[in-house]
Image (cartoon, rainbow, N blue to C red; front, side, top):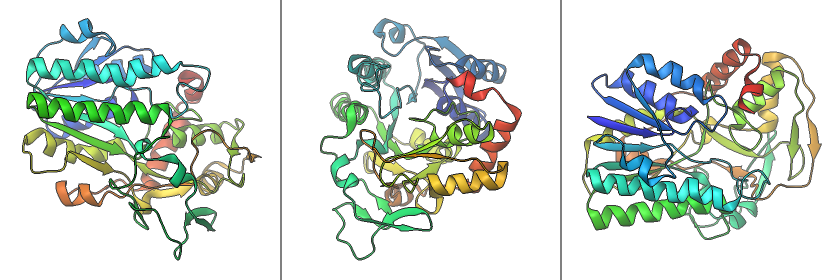
Length: 354
């Protein structure tokens, strides 16, 4: 089977490429990347010896994609992944939509021409911000969790946010770009009769991720803590109690292989994939882990919130478990230790990625 991976020299694309070849050596992988992210050339040098054909192309360019070789399936990992994109003063809303929406349209046109299927990696950020921001929470062991006796919005349980939760705006410009991409992809699938799977992922993390404060938070926090760089709890009570779940991209591979093998229409097209409650922690808990691993480092506090911040975001992956017999296998302590060891071997990682 011939697979095309967009954004292959990013952390997620590169990790998936290596893991797919390990799990299914017969796959023929081609990857495209525009190499605008600092450090992406490092992944090119690692992937080329594995037999991966890497092409310099930009998903925003229809002519770039039209010239690509044929593929049976596309795994779309190309995106601007920051929830602050378009409002952070570094990227414009137009640039964000060119990357995340118009790039998807160009990929779908490629799939239509090649009769190729598409696996679109989406995000937990498609879910509505106001009810998430207003979620009744209590602090338990330095972490927010939904209050057990509180009435929760439809689509949320102690297991997390399910696919049934509202996607009504506001969800951020980033979330809107991904949700629009999902809708357009499903319409292409129905109209032009090729398979599309949409995998909404929680926070993806692992060694080799280029971390910044607004994306790749686990990698950023560990690297910054180790190097004694400034760190700050932002928003809510200013104590770092906000919680996210964590998923290693390698854990997606069994589901991806199952999706590559079926064009059936009986399975739900959209599913959450995440580490879940058992692989979640707060920034304060992450700091405690770093203090024990690297030595103590003080973290500043700022109570003023950032746009689109929410106190507790854990995805419920029950549907993926039911549909694809899927569950995360790489547990949070393993992910953190992997990142820590990589940080120790690469003292200039933050400088490279920023």
